[in-house]
Amino acid sequence: MQRREFMTALMSAALVGAFGLSGCQEKKNLTVVVPFAPGGGGDVLARIVLQPLSEEISRAIVILNRAGAGGNVGTRSVIRAAKGEGLFGYVTNGILCVNKHLYKSQNFDPAKDLLPVASFTKMPLVLALNPKANPAITDFKSLTDFARANPKKLAFASSGVGTTSHIAGELFAQTLGLEINHIPHAGGAAAANEVLAGRIPFFIDVMPNVLPHAASGKLIALAVTSAERSAQLPEVPSLKELGLKDYDLYAWDGLAASKNIDSSFIDAVHAAIGRILTRDDVRARLARLGAEPMPMSKEEFAKFIKTESPRWESYVESFAVPSTSESTR
Image (cartoon, rainbow, N blue to C red; front, side, top):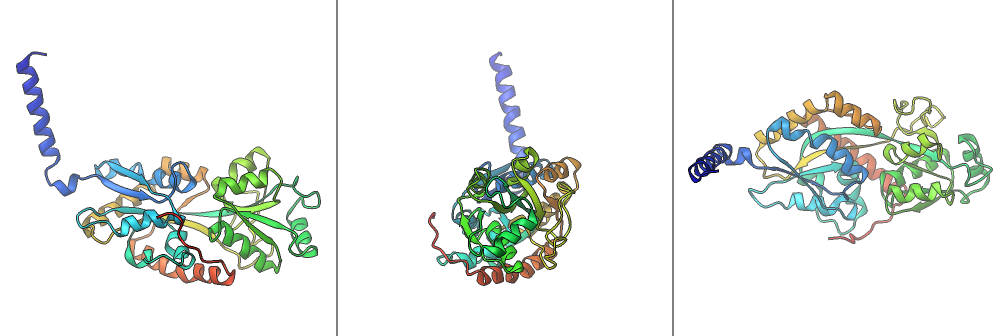
């Protein structure tokens, strides 16, 4: 390239950059903190909804994974974002409704210190059994019969103390009046591995942690925790159908923001997510994980969080879930 051509190209690029940055704030990257490890269930769900956001609002989307303390580490960074550097944060029922009752050192309340932006999805859990773990347990009836006949001799795995998986198992036992043992693990994959190995007979966890093993025949899906059957497991009854008439439990997620973000921008992001949740490709990807879009207005989402919070608090108190200190800052 001749020097004159090079200088012309360089000047053109500078002009494009200048016009592209006009309005400065409008063209800044949108940064979202996902408070879980890359590749995990929460991270995958978040990215399915967040990645199309770039084309919807004409901004680059930067996703930062800041895992630790059940989501508290990343969430705290969103709340404490400096003025002019507002952040968005991926949130779940655990982050917004459970952690403040679980972590005794938590000195913030996400439900009060964050602005609700948009709800994403809801997702039932699945009660999954490995019949090789105990020859006396092969289906739902034999599972509950064994538990009644052998108090405290049946165990269930969970993805950790205070997680939705743990609460689902405790609620299952309480509803049926069973005495069973809880064996917590460091995440859903670890819990699934223990059940797959036959060391623990069953667990109740979110669909992404169960569906692959149920599809391969390594585990038997006995029931879903939502009031209605799941489209991903249409042949599997709900616990409500099996006699637990008040059992209706599901995980949910969404997006929140630090309080220094302009309301007009939050409105734009909210509207964009609403459009994303209607896209066939996005809905198909979510469905493969057993997640169902749960669009709401900002006001409805805020009200939903307030309604859900006391319910999850009652679970933590009812099951005497031990409080813990945050191990990761």
